[in-house]
Image (cartoon, rainbow, N blue to C red; front, side, top):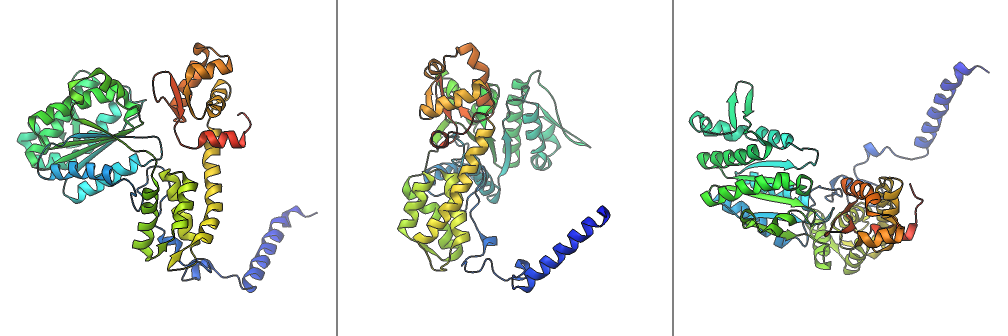
Length: 415
């Protein structure tokens, strides 16, 4: 056999196969003006954006939380110091997306914005300080040399802004937040600082940040702080009753009520396509998503792509969309399961699923006949991977809704 001729024959066969398909009337999608035949809406214009942290086309059911953020932005626009707000909730309920949306709105209103994503590996706050430093360029340029010369932690050089340490990470962060507030006051330009995943930074980040922000508030400087994290974020600081938590308001983001799901689905279809959505479709989406905002976006994306009537979205399309969404959700949960470490961590996860997804560690260990000491590394691994969180002292829970039900239903093999 002449093996050298094999690839050529295969390529030639593929060429004739492609030609036959084209000749049979299968069109080139790049030459079509619209999307898939029989579909009413262009998938390229689909406004729904499923994905952790992505800003949705509509924050249905989040009006009170958005209003809280708008007050912060409006007060900064007028040069006032607003209250500091901590948004808390499990993964996928829209915390990161809300902060991103508010930052964009703040910039549109002429405010400066700084953003930090906390990282538990940032043990000396080096990454946090450098991120803040990079964000100060515009404020430093607007402030003038005399103001910059009076700053404690920041200086300007030909190579750009430089950071002067104050002897330790906490002291440097406190002084840097003070400098940010001075720049805001000197330039007359309010600054909005957002910090995501604050539970990752813990007290190491939160204590100096809130202490300095508290002083800024007392001085009336135009600095706003919006934070987001898991439901227990900053709980230890509130329990300590520290004065610097007085201006920090906790706002919880839970699952959507039906009205919130309806708004999140209906408004984008009405605004972007002039299309109405039947009540039965809303019921199907809400029941299928369980009010979980990330799943609602999956439903919206599928409904848009599969719509057949340019005026109305009805139940048959929702049923078809449900099949697609079901596959995406199954993949979502399966990918989380594959991230579970083998051994005791996997045993903890299965026991937690049998307990409904939220249980006392002691009860799980009694069921598994494992000691606290032996289970501690497994528990830590699940927390570090973001698969679980601690809703209270001595408790463990899954960080996304529905994972316990999926595990009980599918009973996947242990990793």
